[in-house]
Image 1 (cartoon, helix red, strand yellow):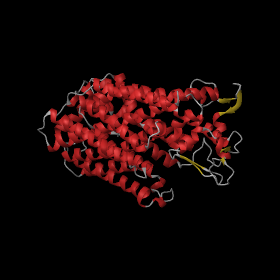
Image 2 (cartoon, rainbow, N blue to C red):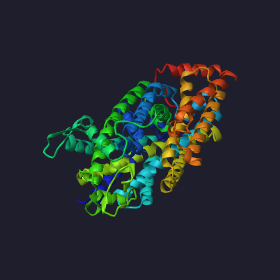
Image 3 (cartoon, helix red, strand yellow):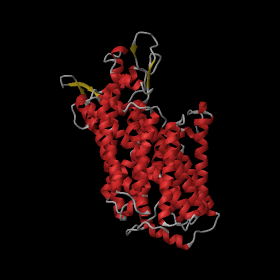
Image 4 (spheres, rainbow, N blue to C red):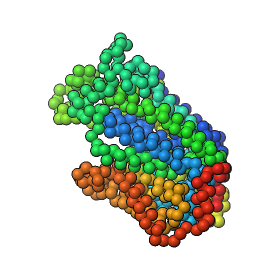
Length: 572
């Protein structure tokens, strides 16, 4: 059976599974739509959280980043995993104790202010839209390669599938769909990693193969360690040494910290902890999610290294002298059709050559690495099709979670809590589904017409979460003195500073985007941590010169700080 037919079958079967789950778990109330009725088992919620958290950025892009930049790519591994630990330990149980539906719900009630709620809604919607644009584009890229349709058609198909199970099932449908998507995703990621680890090092566990010696065609040890091989290839071809970085220490620290606090402030991840019955279950589901996440995240560096060696030797040949294009592997020509690989025969010798100097004739998009790895390693067609299904699962699972945040922010926080307080439960559910449908249309438009600065938009999403929602949530939980004036001023100032900094260096004056002009040597990707400090500083100063918080709010904070009991999500 050919690759395209296998891909249609495997991806089609996963879509049928997702839609079937959505029909089975259709939401019948706002509580089921917003928080799955608050009765999700911790292990199930942990798996769904892992799928929600591990977006197309994790499945498709992260191994590509590490593969291309080596040591410096570790900031993403540390930042994103560290952020989840921060969220699980410092925020999840306390927010579950509060027992609301959304992050703006918490901020609005904790700071006894509709203005604070509205600012939080704006932040949440903007974060989610910037994130979801990349997810929908990822859907289009996967389809364009493996189903041989154009990117626009791929985005439309993805829009339909997400629309069906997100709008119909809400959080209830999304939760159980994400469990299935996690299973598809992790199986699709681990199978090629195990295959390649055995082929290159003889180890069944990629994590062990990462630090092992390579084996020869006869299965005997070559005496050369994988990372030593990569270091040698990298320096020979003009790249930086794979195991050493070029970023400054302060920038590495800032990016890691910004990704950590940004991850911990992402509303679509936080809301997952509102779906379990008890505070104890929130802690338990956080632990399970870490286990499920660790399976992929400890494998990513190994897969990145394996893929890098295979890619270079496939393009340049074992002797690094180039390979004739006419006899080049099919994977190169297949990805050329998508425009994500280009070849310019500079010396007219008919051979390809990949390097980081004047010899280079190849332009390779780093986002193809995971999707192309099975083809590069010449694995069976069913493995290639499985990876395509995994990439789709990663993009769709996060898209659904983000759309739910958008819909609940509009229907619950703007309409029910602000503009239309007397609407019925049925009408609120209708508005939530309508908001999700409109959100899908807008996200699909961004997927079809992506801005030319997708990487900057992703950085902006993390920066926004770090500088706006994270400080407000932390102070809301752990401070009994922070008032509404301080929280609002902090969110607005942190948001303004971060947006201005990223906009200046990424869009307004990109030629100045280098370490010589950055504030304290911190790149736009890491500036969210400074925005966070601005938020904290302004909030504390404003709080000191404005009125004290009401006594009932002090009692509320004290109750949150001792997370005992269930704390059912309420609609008041």
